[in-house]
Image 1 (cartoon, one colour):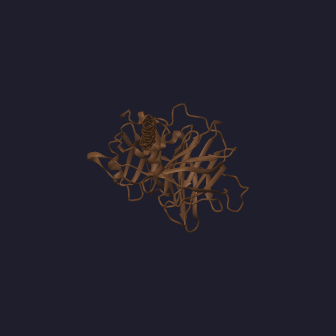
Image 2: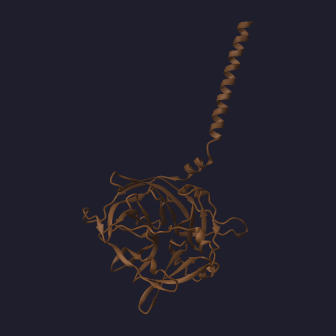
Length: 372
């Protein structure tokens, strides 16, 4: 009887141990963060191939005032990948956050070699940009530009319809947290909707950046000719108002993105296409002091990219300053989801050092400061 009782104890003990183990495993599985599941669902596979600056001569490593630090041709079997129209880069250069023509977030890690040259891109994720909820629900499509503001905030420009939206990350540079962020209306410029309503279809805000005083500078792709000078419409947005200005360009060149340099100057990426010249791109630099409401501003060309330099539909621009005080520039192409076009990411360094401005580059609190 004692032996039978002992066997029963051993049997039930084994059963209890088994059930407990199963429950523990089940509990552990159910306790995994929801974020992990979301990350696995948003993950996309990328393949990257290094590309030279110049098709004909790989030994060429400079164009204008820029020194080439590596570039990648990026492909993916995922049909959602592509159409990157604007992006920002974390201060350490390890992560990028982009927006696409299909209104998706794009987050990825950039990999460098021992010489700090760009050699790969990994750990990529894409997710739909969430629109406004509630009674003011609005579907803003075709994201064209993004700029960082104070803390963990970002403002995104859309073209369908023409509008701006604000998104809040959970912490600064936790870009993946934006996948669950819901769009918020921006109310710091009451006349913004009326101004945007006059923009032609597909010629909205392509370039957007935050100025040292917290206001934003926006440039549209729409151009007009005034006194023989081709100009793009632009606005300074913030402090309770939206003020117009003009950006001087030249025939067939259109601004596609902007970034604020450490000293407050503005770098503008322009793209070009014509039957005579084909595809081209250039970078112009606007002095900070020239950016004034009601003025026509003109930048100095610091780099001009055309064949045989490696390029495509160059549309996105990002800037950061590294630990050595060097200004690092990234430009990326928008392939328009076309198999005949490429997604390329290129990295450069500005030859001359640039000192930091006394004030912070980004400043949502100052944007919302009212009409001062």
